[in-house]
Structure formats: C-alpha cells, structure tokens
Length: 296
Length: 298
Image (cartoon, rainbow over all chains, first blue to last red):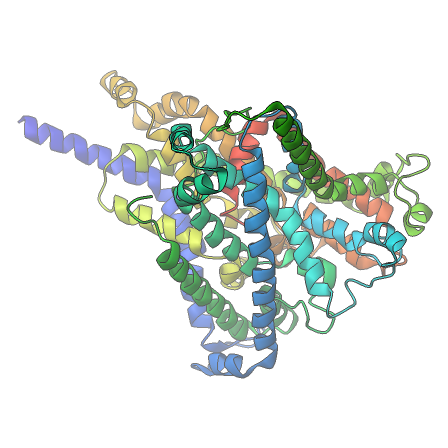
C-alpha cells in the first residue's frame, strides 16, 4: 500500500517535473537543434530563397574547399583569434593577480576597469571606428605628437586586422579578469600561508599553487574566448566591412555575405557547419590538453 | 561548464595572501602597483570618456580633432531624436530586451526548478541536451533560424526579434544551481497543505529565488541589449530596428566626412546609459553576471 502510494506520488512528481521543463526543452528543440539539422539539410542544396531549393549533394562542400575567399576568411579568423585571445589571457590573468589582494582604491580601480564591459560591443566598435579615424581620431591626437600621425588604420591591409585586435583586447580584458579573479578567490589562503612557511617565494607559489588550482578556470577562459573570437562579426562589420580587400573578412562575415548579399543559402550553411566542426575540434583538443586532472 | 564560479563573492575588498615586508619595500611595491593599475585604467577608460566628450562637441569640433568640447553641446541629445528615428530604435530595444528578460525569468526558472527538484524520466537527457546547446555558436544556426522565421512571416516583427532568445541555457544552469539550495521541507509542507504545484512554484519558489532572478535579469539584459547580428538580419526596416543596428546604420549611412559623429556619439552614450545605471546600482550582480556571461554571446 505504502509502496503504491509512493509510486503514485513519484509519478505525479515526475509528470510535474516534465511539465516544468517542457517549455525550455521545446524551445531548444525548435530553435537550436532543429536549425542545426536544418543547416545540414540546406547545405546539400542550392537555394537562393527565390527559386525552389535544388539538391546538389556535397557540391557546396567541394566548392568551399576550393574557394580561395573562404580560405582567406579561415586564415583571417585564425589571425584574429590568436591575436586576440593570447594577449587577453595574459593581460587579464595579470590584472586579476594584481587585483587579488586588498589595497586602498580597490573599488575605484575595479569600477574603471569594468567600463569596457559596460559599453556594448556595437557602441564600442562605433566609438573605435572614430578613434582610428586618420584625421580626427583619438589615436591621431595621441600619436601625431610623437611623429606617428596620419596612420590610416582601417584602410591599410597590414593595419586593419591589428586595429580590430587591439579594440577586442581592450574590450575583452575586463570580463576575463573577473573570471580569473573569481577563480583566484576560490583558492584557500591557507595554501599560500603553508607554502610561505615552507619558504616558497612568490614565483614558486604561483607555479605550484595558483597555476594548478586555476586550471579549470583557465580551461573555461580558453575555450570560451576562442569560441567567441571565432564568432566575431560586429567589429569587422562596423569598422571595416571585411576590407580593405578581404583583409578582415572573418568567417562569420563571409557567411553573412554569402547568405544575405549573394543569397547562397546552401553555400553559407555549409560554411557555418564547417565552423561548428572546427570549434568542436578545437574544444576537444583543449580539453585533452588541459582537461581537469584528478588532482585539480 | 558548471565550473563557473558564479557563487564566488566578487566585488568586495578581499583578504590578502601577503607576507610581511619591510616598510620601504612595501612603499615601492605600492608605487609600482598603482602606476601599473593607473596606466591600465587609463587605456580601459579612455574610449568611453572620449565617446561622452565627443557627444558634447559641435560637428566642427569633432572634425578638427578636439579632445574636449569648448562648450558642452547638450542639444546633441535632443537632435539625435529629432533628426533620426532614434526614439523608435530606443523603444524597440526596450520592448525587445524587456520581453526577452521576462520570458527568460519565467522559462529558465521553470526549467531550473524541474531539474533541481524533480526526478523524471529522461532528466539526464534533458540536462545534456540543454548543455550541448551552449556549445552551438549563434552564427551556425543564424541562417536556418532566419529561414524558419522567414517562413513564419516574422521578419520585421517583435516576435521574430524576441523568440530566438526567449530561453538561455546558461540561465537554466544558474536557476538550477540556486533552486537546488531551496529546502525540500518548504515544498513538501505546502504539498501537505494541499497547494497545487503551480501555486507552490509561483508563491513559494519564485520569491525565494529572488536573488538568482535578479542576477539572471541583469545577465539577460546586458547580453540582449547589445544583440547585433540577429536584429541585423531579422529587422530590415527602421520601424523594427533596435539601438545597436540603428546606430550602426547611422554610422554607415554617411561617408566619413558627412557622418554626424557628434550625434552618433550622443546616441551611443544614450545606448550605454541603461547598462551603466544597472552597473552602478547592482555592481556585485553585474560582476557575477558578466563573468558568467563570457560563455554566451559575443
């Protein structure tokens, strides 16, 4: 009797649980999982939205592999990603280490540091498109007194990508600093005290306590900064539109152009699925290399 | 990615793992640290300051490369509304972001509650399913999503702008984590008293979850207030454009000499203002939300 009652109640509870979860599950099914499957389907078609889709099999993928524009975009995305994430890791970790102690003015500094996190990426990009302006930009005002005036940041194929990278580093640093800081706060202070008693210097403490204990957070920062850098479109769209030439045509911009300028839906879908594949591969490699070991 | 230390206290003065140092060494260390921190702060703050400064200049001042306005031109903040459909952009942003926040508060807390407090068939599957969606970049689903929304006739509509963001996987994790800390006794006592499950959820669970809901609201607000890519493709008329796309279109509209930078900077400042106010008012939640946010959108 009791057993039966409990089972009935469990059934009621399990039904309730499912009902509460249902809207979210339906949402992700319709708006995330279905589109990925749908993207796979479209990528096998030739479709310009105006005529009915035509089955072409793997032709889009073959064309993509031979497309020098796509190869260029892949290269540009790699440049952007490496150029952005590596400095961000170093600077934000350094800043987090500096902020991981109490001193006078801590709150004031923190507020200032977080300003780029408050300014949205679109606004940030628009402001920087003005900062880089060769005649009235802020950089011009700073650099011309030291004889570096009149640099055409966004018109120079050599400088356009570094310009995007600089703006992304300044924008991204505060957020990753916060993540690192939260990770540093999670390390028990006793560990440091014990190490100090054993005569460990600050370098030794960093290597043997901070680094291993910060590993999960570091992995998180690495994976997500890369995932985000791979998806970058806003600054490229606003500052350079992919130019000069195709020097800053990152893959998402390539996909956007193919889909909405040239209406090649199948081709664009194939390109975005290759991005997904690349990202999954990178994530797997990172987890293999830096994955949580049992000691951490 | 549940390892995100969202619950870690951020934002208050903290303990120092320091060692005793002599007074002179400490003073030098202080000087070094402060000059380093100040230099970094200057770099991080300058763009925002300059945006505000340029928003108060005349067009001639902007073009002359001035750093500060001679006389602050507060009129720019009126002109931006008069000369461009900026009021429409702003209203759209408020409507879209507001709806997205409300929907997230409801659906994420429901799903988080289900995952934290109920055992049901396929729960692990549901959890894994939601987890994987975090890994799918938005750019990958943007095209098929566009086609779906296009089929529904939702291009240039509020539904079309809101729907793709109505639930966030990260929000579900946040809520699940918090809901797990609510004691079962409260819920069971209410059940014994004959309260229905919906009543329990709305009358007991949601009020208890207020701090987490606050963080979730801030998180969702700041991500969606800035959403650029989706409204760019899903809204092609000014009537449905939100602030980010509207501003970008204003900047794109003119060639560089005729672009009204002073007005665009005024618009940009207004666009940043809501987030800035949130930041000042709820600094700790803001910091928690932002440090968890890195995993979501760009």
